[in-house]
Image (cartoon, rainbow, N blue to C red; front, side, top):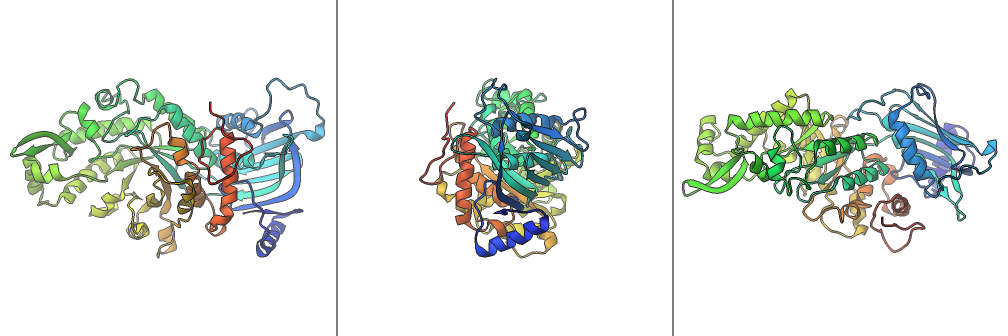
Length: 535
């Protein structure tokens, strides 16, 4: 954790002095959120001037073999470091002693790919007089280090920029740190999604779970099945995500080290699908005749799986991430076994009797095989795990229900499956900002289990469902509460166990987000030197 050290030279000294400071209770409030694993700072500070500040490469990276991801990040972070820097003011005089360079080195030159579940985000940052060095195993770790560096820079009362002598060694506690946005219940314009990705990078989230379609609307424009959006979206032109839109989101996310993980939830939550795909949904019956209503996807027809195979083949090419979310939650079975005689006959033929969970397991197994053939790792909601007998065919389970959610986590890891925890981080319901502490005081590994089992908890996710959320309240509904979850998923639990110590740091971080143009609700009475300026 960040502690003040007025004169340090070696890592041994850092660690010893950190121990002494912790023992006497003189831990200084620092400016990096989420809190790094190790962070030592000194009162010694250095002035930064935009005219003489530069980013540089060393090691495998050179001017001739640079990195497009980092080149773009340098431009973004220069504006973040020096928000008041006037353009066209390059004629100011300076001396050689005022030059400051942040040099970047990577252990692996992986700038052309996409971040994935196994990507390292570890980095080391060392700030000295006139220079700073940032070393990372991958470009994605370098992005996290750049974010930490940007949070260390501050201004005095006359507007001069400074940074203190600092050493950081950092890595995330969990590899999966996600935010779910629901673009079916309310359409979110692409700029609103991009702005959220920016804010996610500031809090070091690394997965955008795109719940792109659901019952109310189907805004994803499929090339293979164009009528899904032309008939299933709120509006076939203004409320859709074209292939170009999707590529734009994926590219924007990639440049910030964020994966884009799509969810096409079935067999339930598919009413909008049926508008553009006849015979996909199960007809409901009343008095022996079709009632005109429809239930979940019809699992008895071979045409259902032909359609799903074609749709997921397209999705697999559009979304490069190796993970895909298949949903599987909250299925209404009434049209399956209560009213539809053909479904009941199919269940009898398959030996399911009237056990609807076996019918859904049959359907999910078929979809899992489709995605497996496409070399995708499937995520399902916990409902699938709860009723699925062939659990070995599952890979990743997302736990979302309330109650004893750690009991469910324990059951899943005992079955040898990976877990994403979402239950404690549902933010869609309105609530006071000061309840951020309930999202901070979450301990994902506080269950009885072996170390091997706990390693199967790959991370957690903040979920913002769209019943009451659109672009007008998206950002303040998310932030700063999502940032509380971000620190829980990134930082060391023992070092971040105190809400009282976290509060002033989160207040400071909120002010930084406001200056970066993010609408963040206040935590309590107070002010920021640079309040939010609407644009």
